[in-house]
Length: 449
Image (tube, rainbow, N blue to C red; front, side, top):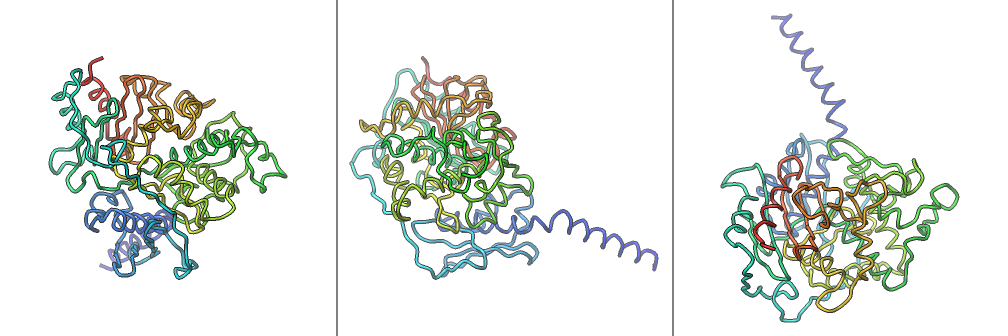
C-alpha cells in the first residue's frame, strides 16, 4: 500500500509539473479570450451565456474557462480553475474591451458619432426589406440546396455555419441562418475587419491626405532600417518585420489580442527581419499598427473615432457594425469588427462595384484594383488586406474572386465576373472542417451564364 501511495504521489507531482510547464502559461490567454468573447457576444448580440459557451467558446482549452456575467456592471469575468481571472467591460457604442488591473473604468471616454443611413430603399442599398426578385437564369431549387448544404443537420457540429447571404446583380437571392441567429444577429468578422481598415486608408488616399508609397510616418523608426518601410508594404503584409501568428500556441498575435494595452505598438516595436517587399508574412499586428498610423493622422481622438464610420461604415449603411478598441483607444482593426451578415454583404457590394455605392464614388476604382492585385511574394493569395483567388486556392471558383476572411471561417467573397457577393459566417475554420471550394462552387453553378 505504501509503495502504491508513493507511486500515486509521484504521478500527481508529475501531472502537476506537466500542467505547470504546458498549461499554466496559457491560462491568462485562455481566460482573456473567454472573458472578451462572453462580454462581446452577450452585450453586442444579446447572446445568453450558455449559447456563447456552447458555440463560441467550445474551443480546445478555451472551454476550460469558467465564466460569469454582471448585467448591472456590464462586464464579464473568466478564470481557469480559479486562476488568472480576467475581466472584459462593455461600453455602449464601443463594444467590449479586455482590461487589466490598471485600467481606470471610471475614466470618461469618447464615443464615435454615428449617422444612420435613412433613404427608404430596400436592402442592400437601404435598410428596408429587400424586394422579391426573380432571375430567369437562377436555378432557385439548386441554389436553396447549395445554401442548405452549408449548414449542419439539427444537432450537428461538422460545418457549424451560422449565416449565408448571397447577392446577385444587387439583389438578395438567398439567405439562411442557423438556430439562434437571424438577419439582426451581429457576428464577429475576426480578420475580415482588416479589410475595413484598408478601406479607411483608401478614403484618405482618395482625399489626397496620405501617400501610401511614402515611408510610414512612424517617428520611432527614423533612426534604424525600418525607416524605409512604406504604408504600401504594411498594407501588403510585406514589411519584413518580425511577427509570429499561430493561434494554437502562445505567440505574438495571441499576446497582442489578450494581453497588450496598446495593440498598435506591439508590431511597431518589432525589429526588421527582411528587407521590405521581399518576404510576405501574415500579421494581425501589422493591421493594428496601420490602425495606430490612422489614429496619428488626426488631431483629436474624436476625429479618429468618427472617421472610420463616416468614411465607409455608415456611408454604406452598415449601421449594425461596431469596431472595438483596445485599452489605449485604438481600434482593433485586425480582428474586432461586428456586424450583421447583411451588413457584411454591403461591404462586399462596395468592392464589387469598384468603390461606388449607389452612385457615390466612396473609393477610387484604382484603390479597389490595388486591393485585388497580388502582393509580391504572396503567390497570388493576398492583396492589400484582402485575400485573393488569383493563385487558384479555390480551383472551382473564378480566379478574379477576392475576399475578406476571418478566423473560424468568416468570408465575404466578391466575384466581379459573376456580379456576385457571397457571405458565410461560422465557427469552424474553413480549410479544416468547411469546404469553401465546394460551397462556393455549388452556389455559382446555380446561376446559369
